[in-house]
Amino acid sequence: MVVFRVPNMRCGGCARSVTAALRGVVPAAEIRVDMNRREVTVAGGADEVALGRALREAGFEGERLAA
Image (tube, rainbow, N blue to C red; front, side):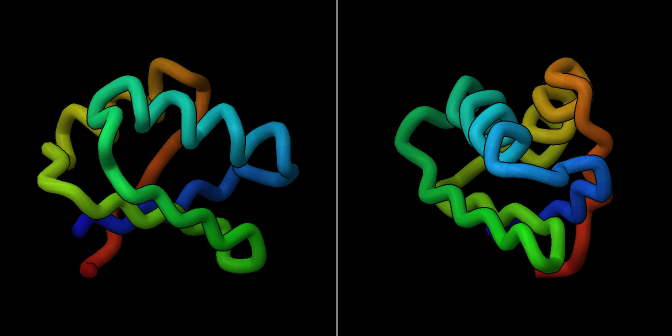
């Protein structure tokens, strides 16, 4: 499981964009978004480097948190 804090994820549209970017890396991953904490959790054998890159390419800075 990988958890990222995404400070510039501020609305539902942002959450959908973040989810789509992460699904592009791991289509079968379970992705949970917590808008109040601005965190996203990815479960399903994902490579955190690839996920971080996908977030950046989508315009979001993701800080990896301890899971």
